[in-house]
Length: 266
Image 1 (cartoon, one colour):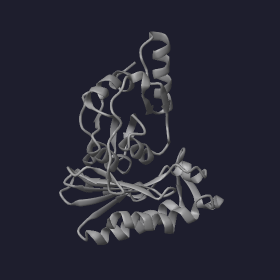
Image 2 (spheres, helix red, strand yellow):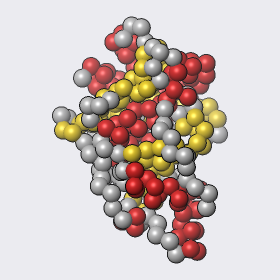
Image 3 (cartoon, one colour):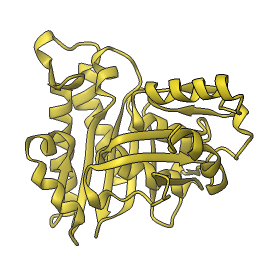
Image 4 (cartoon, one colour):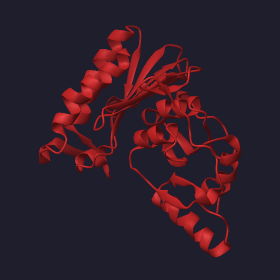
């Protein structure tokens, strides 16, 4: 409850007052297509201060802080408690005035995520959960969508993967999902998957802890299954930024059905 309150206060104070009010100097590129705004910086600063006060012996790993000093990622593999913060997930959407963005917090101890929160500030909605205790929203326990035939599923994947899958469906006549899209906000995708509104998602190349530490835990606590690459290894934030492909599905059987299309080479 304390973390949820901190997220709501941060969103109301630092994020929403700047939404659709950013000046040209309030947005910059950290790299090609990788934006940061004054709201990201202010949100991370407020979250880091408030969360550190809840656990005085903790370390903060924030997206913007790690960009400035990548060595702080080493704390994720250590024994102590670590707050992992994405101050605005979906910054590109936020900067463009689109309502699909979120604030994400994970609590990692000994390299394992033990609690997670994702807050949608536009709708003032938060999902939260802890290891072994389920995933929740407003006191109601969450559940992933039941597994269904592949042709009836909706999933998220990067553009290059969507193209590859569509081509295989057309040339090989194999069953593929009915709809593929991408929110460009992993937090909102995890929210929808944990609440049964999105069947699956495929993430790849560089898996960043602020994008996935909370979401993977919440999805798993809602009954889902996820794994990295064809070996099916579980995702862990302990490795910092991990190279690989993460596939998130309703259950292990559905993961296997999707893996050939979305992870294994075409």
